Structures are given as structure tokens and as C-alpha cells.
Image (cartoon, rainbow, N blue to C red; front, side):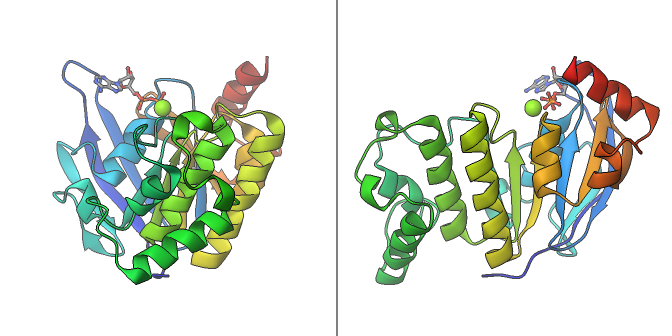
Amino acid sequence: MTAPATIELRDIRFSYPGGADMVFDLKIRAGEKVAVMGPSGSGKSTLLNLIAGFERPQEGSILIDGQDVTTLPPDKRPVSMVFQENNLFSHLSVRQNVGLGRSPSLRLNDCDRQAVESALMRTGLGDKADRLPAALSGGERQRVALARVLVRNRAVLLLDEPLASLGPALREEMLALIADLHLEGKMTIVMATHAPEDAGRLTDRLVHVAEGRIAGIGATKDYLGGQAPEGFRDYLGKNRA
Ligand code: ADP
Ligand code: MG
């Protein structure tokens, strides 16, 4: 495994065409697990997409492991990203979907193939490797996405509401798996989520995003334990109501 990396957003300004200005300034430590929480449309996905390179800021710079990656395309950044759904290619088997993490053209050497098999075992998918994604449950599909993260072996893992479509038991199982991957790989993890329980279970620090900016940052246990600024408590209250 590679070592975990710091992530730094320096004076980032970004807007979609015709959209409001978003502003992000944030430092994440190597190996940290950070939750990004805030209302729908507040900019959580945009923040992750900027780190991953799916969006480019109009101003400012993004550093990963101290390297300026602002102009690098997503595949050149040391980042893996898992979305809420549609992480897989429907015409490829589970094994092939995982293999893509090693080679986009699926030209795998023995070492790659070994890594794929081991990731399939690790995520409990050994007996489903030849299935197509349509023949899996939602939870299994997310495990395939995590198996691919494992074989990619990147220093940063971005999770955009990865558990939002799963029931409580599966969420618990997936959170445990993500925590395990973190222990093994010591990746830096940034997870956008609406669920305080998920943030509390996995993360050390919580970033509150509101209206395209960072409204507050604190220890997850303080933020969820009632010691957050009023704005965040309002958000939680509304979310729970
Ligand atoms: P969140 O993930 O917190 O729900 P997003 O980052 O997806 O929020 O969206 C932030 C804002 O940017 C919203 O106002 C949303 O409508 C807008 N937005 C998101 N994606 C696009 C896009 N591809 N084009 C234009 N506007 C977008
Ligand atoms: Mg989003």
C-alpha cells in the first residue's frame, strides 16, 4: 500500500455556468477520516469532484501529498472515488469491474490478477466473481466498488454518499469494511453523507458545508454530541425531523 496523503484546497473558487460562487479552503491530514455534511445542493459533491479532478476550480490550487494537482486529470491523481450508485460497468463481470482498477484496458499481469482475487476474497465476493452487476444486490455492488478501490491502491479515497441506497444492516457492514480498508491501507478518507450515524461511526473530523462554503469544522464527536455551532445543529434538527 502507498502511504496516506494530505489534501489541501487553497483559496478555491468554483462555479458552474450560471451558478453561485463556491469557495473552499481546507486542509486534511494524512490518514485522516473526514465527513462532509450539509444540505442537498450545498456543494458536498462539488467539493469531492474538485479533489478528484472531475471539476476544475476557476481560482486557487489543490495539493495532494504536497503536490499541486490542480491541472491534472482524474486518472493522474492518487485518488479513488465511490459514488452512491452506478460505479460499475453493467456489461462487465464483477471480476472485470475490479480488474479495471488495475488496468482500464483489462490487460492484467499475474500480479494484477492476484490482487484482484485477493480483493474479491477480502470483500466477500469470491463466489460472485463471474456475475454481472445486475445479478447483485445494492450492497454487493458497493462491495465491488470497494474491491476496486483496494486494487487501485491510491492514497486518497473519496466517498460520495456511498451508503445512501442501503438498508441499516448493510450500511453497518459496509462501514466496517471501509474502516478495515483504512486500517490496512491507511488511506485518507473523505466521505460526503447525510447520515450522522455513518459520520459518527467512521470519521474523526466533520466538515459542515453550506451554500457552497465551509461553514464549520470540528471533531465529529463534538459536532454530533451537541457541541456544534447553531447552524449545524439546525441542519441536523431539520434532517432528523
Ligand atoms: P450536494 O452534493 O451537497 O447535494 P452539489 O455539489 O451536487 O451539492 O451541488 C452544489 C450546487 O451546484 C447545487 O446548486 C447544484 O444544483 C449545482 N450543480 C451541481 N452539479 C452541477 C452541474 N453539473 N451543472 C450545474 N450545476 C450543478
Ligand atoms: Mg451530492
